Length: 263
Image 1: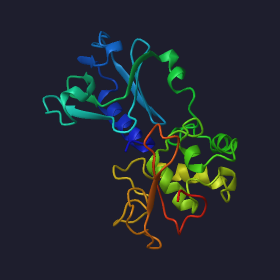
Image 2: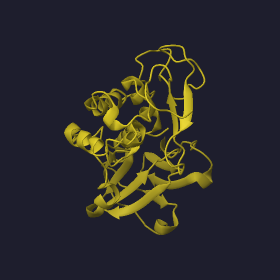
Image 3: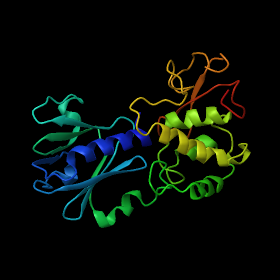
Image 4: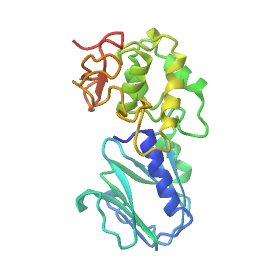
């Protein structure tokens, strides 16, 4: 599932193969930008911003994409067969003489003027994997609504950018509170942002996400229901959290984690 670390990996892979090269092929398969011609322009850099990906292109343009639940960017060598999914799922094709980047199932894809990037990402809170991470600002935003459930607050990209459903469940497990616990009732709330920053940075350069530090199990609770908790053996539980407009599977151990939870 794409989260801040996934987007970080994708951005750096794209930057490695595209930055400094001119596009020999460019096809944006979304109606609004289908006629945009980027051929001949140079890719300047590819930068992650929370769960958003910003590809800056010569001429003052930025290609903004968001992976959401199942989007992906794949990179292939020239002539290599594309294997990211059926053709109708392709939303972008960007090629150089040596590589082709293909964007699959991208729910957000738009071409902006680079000067207008704030329109797409200006609302975001401090980026957990960004060079300008500011723990004090993130904590202040988190504590601004003390009655809000911690799981919902962690997913709010305006508070801190980069956490998704996987890290939400794992962070709450490590804090020993349920995701429905109010932020203001979480013991030592300063640990929340510190832990989020530590976990994402620990996985920044890994392609297999791990929050346990163990080789036999990568995650404590996410995806484990109804298997036993790695810590106490109690069956891990799962429920939806939020207003129901998006799939928000939330995992927790009813013994290790205290606080309110669905019956």
